[in-house]
Image 1 (tube, helix red, strand yellow):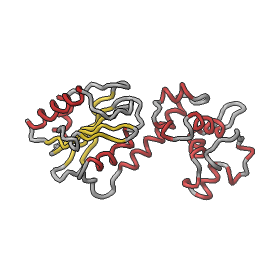
Image 2 (tube, helix red, strand yellow; image 1 turned 180 degrees about the horizontal axis):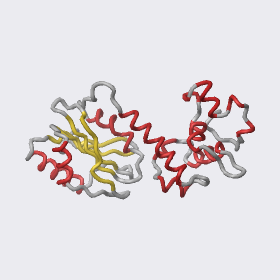
Image 3 (tube, one colour; image 1 turned 60 degrees about the vertical axis):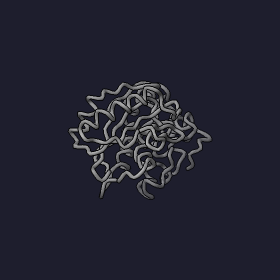
Image 4 (cartoon, helix red, strand yellow; image 1 turned 90 degrees about the horizontal axis):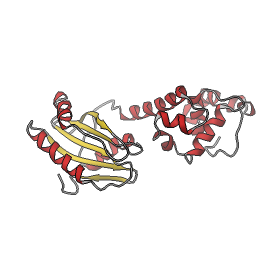
Length: 234
């Protein structure tokens, strides 16, 4: 089955071996298309409409891009997609979050930050599709290996409020040697605002009082990122 939803298909239209659950059992979960995976997460359809048809319609509404669903909040999933209630919306959000957490797990050594591209590669999956602005801090060891990642604040579509005192409290409790600041611009504009520049200056000054270095401040958008360090603004 392809991810292009040409027509609505009922489960009974499919041979048993082509039904998503049976196909996963026989050929493995990786053999399933995006539509089939989403069908399994949804679980059941509506009267007269199969879960497969609901999944097809959801993907069609976001141009068949999973990132389009990933960027929607639980409430938005309920609001935007017929047949998706609270339980199904939470299941879909949970599936995406499990994928993010699995990717972020490091079975061996924690990743080492050597340049801005390393930061972007590590954190982009969490922020580039977020519809709201998030401010995140990475804590690093003396050798610049990531020891933690925590969200300081979440705001609206254009701004979020960061409490420098709470940010530093978290960094100190995690015994950070160095930190990296990261936030996203849902608008896609990567240029730092005057507020971004002022906040970076204040955090850097507060961190220096405790012997903690701010290595970079990264702004993430859908088209890439901006590095304060690379641009000589740190």
